Image (cartoon, rainbow, N blue to C red):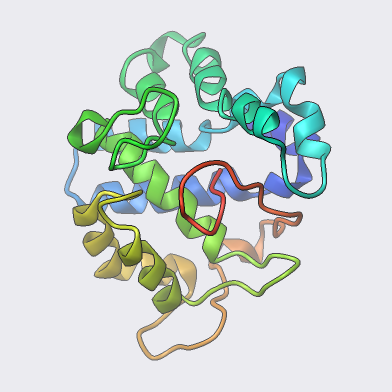
Length: 218
């Protein structure tokens, strides 16, 4: 599924793999069980697979901003991704729900169901942050990748709004994520992804969806 969607939308090339590794690292830092870590890794790897449906093809090919109607259509992709994952018996339940809710904002302004706070599955809150980490620390045509420190400034700015504030602070203190992102406390400028040495960088414009965050995730 992941390879198929990345073949259709080269802009996402390598994105799902990186999100998976970041989410796995956050889950381990939380001390979750091996089973929970594996479920979160599976959900994060498949969080965008619903975009393989033909209804999203014109949106993925479009350059520039989406119209309001197109944004509403794109906001269906978490549900479509969850439906696909649920065709595999072992992914029904926690994995399916994590995928469905990975665009729910902590303050309740997200989609598809407007969940807030701890109503949002922990796995979905983790994927939201992992997704944003990749969005902000990957080169874009209009800007270079942001440093770990600059990325954390943005995460803290939207903690309690878009992101779980406790997870934001955990990420800020995570040596494992710094290693994955190729960042150190002394480094400035654009980090070099440890994963990026063998994964193609993404390209193409971010499409704004909903909320104040200046980047679109996933």
